[in-house]
Amino acid sequence: MQEGHAIRIVGGQARGRRLVAPKGLATRPTGERVREALFNMLGLEVESATVLDLYAGSGALALEALSRGAASAWLIEPDYQARQAIKKNLAVLSPGTEVVVKALSAERFMTQAVKMGKRFSLIFCDPPWKLGLGRIVIQTLGNITEPGGLVIVEHPASQNTIVIPGLVPQRRRQWGDTAVSWYRSETPQILSREDPAGEP
Figure (tube, rainbow, N blue to C red):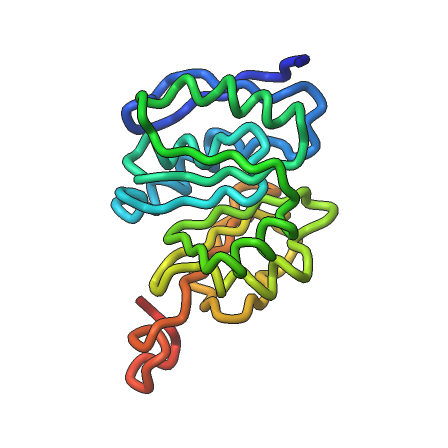
């Protein structure tokens, strides 16, 4: 495997440990500055979370979450070179950490996850920017998010926040040409008459 530039875990028990991304990886790793800001905003919501990294790439987002106390993570990545990088990067984690790596496209995994009734409390979506989130992914994200769970979508700053059925847009942050949109799954508390704006 040809290795590209190294990136680091920026917080938690594995802070400072270096990760690698294969050279020419189509899904560029989330920059350290954006990742650090994102996880600082997430705060305690990461602890004990069941994480899905739907476009895993090098696995940096899922590994950052596990370093900061997430209970488990599923990493979905169809590219062989990227999966080889993930396997190498898993060495930064404590022994016994619950990690599942699936050699599937996001669309195929979503179809299977809905059939299995699988749900996650924290989902990261950083698709190739030229492709964005596919129709199947958009239609099913709400079905695999736990009640009150969060979905984080990274996208170009030039792109508007998209509508995802079953999820309520909460906030949007921008760093240079990178934007991150937050969604929370619909719950009676979020969608009550007393709280029409969907604020937590």
